[in-house]
Image 1 (tube, rainbow, N blue to C red):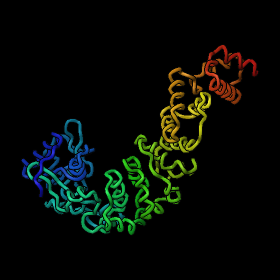
Image 2: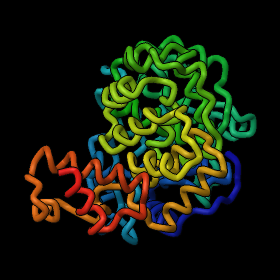
Image 3: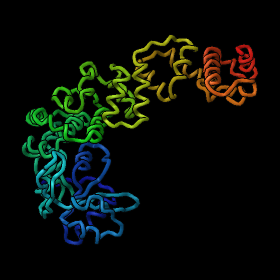
Image 4: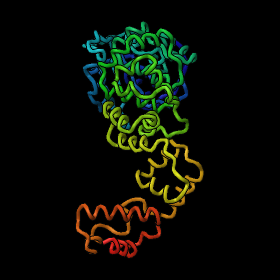
Length: 393
């Protein structure tokens, strides 16, 4: 144990204090302790306690049975939810992901033993200080990811942990300890038993980290071939990860998939259960990846018209378009040039009045009008466009 005071949100302090007042042990645990020691802002504050779930529920006015069969109750305080979980020992893992049953225990050490990595197996309270039974602080200082106890056992219990190890190494820029790394390669086939949704979440977090290039380890350890044939076949060797790109999901996936064909990118993302918005944006970026655009207004307008404004801005970064194209982009936007059918000076009703039949013919005329104003934006006036339509007819 190391006596060191670390700041906690007042709600967490109140929950821990309430549990202790009633004679129970209680600590902040896991990632929140790790992140605080690293000087990072924790995303969540989890609490572990010797109190049983029903005892926790009796002590707090507003609770939710989040995962009560596994000992977790969410305590609501100041409109925030804080997960409070009873010390537990996991039973046998039948499906390579979840224990068949859990047994509650009164010993904090038994609870910490079941956790994945040493840096995630630390607990803290103001009264006790940091409880660090597996030298997580030492591993933070050495910047390594190491399993609690025997690495192979931890990974056999839950195969998703092999991806979590690589994801943490990318987020924290830590090295994976040698025995842990070898165990990842041995357990790689077990990832086939994990749902695609859970795999995708880990891969997305990895790509959105400060070191997305560490996705190479997913291939070097052999994990990729058990995710999907499409994912395994991606040209990962050439992926460097562009510094400075937005950490949005679709941006990082587009950067990773930019060297593959759009249809392959779509198949990969669909297989990983990505949402349609992400898939559509990635498809557009991959289709345009590597394409040169002349630094001329009509060419820039034509390119901009094929995608959402934010996607165009990402493409400018992705393809490293020069200052002239950036300047033209700003000029086109400042002037308010028409870039899509929605901003065309005429619409369907105008064309019907002019004698155009609704349907395929109208659609073709609207596309021709858009092409015209993309070349000459000053022609985006109702009378000019209707005159053009009358000439075509």
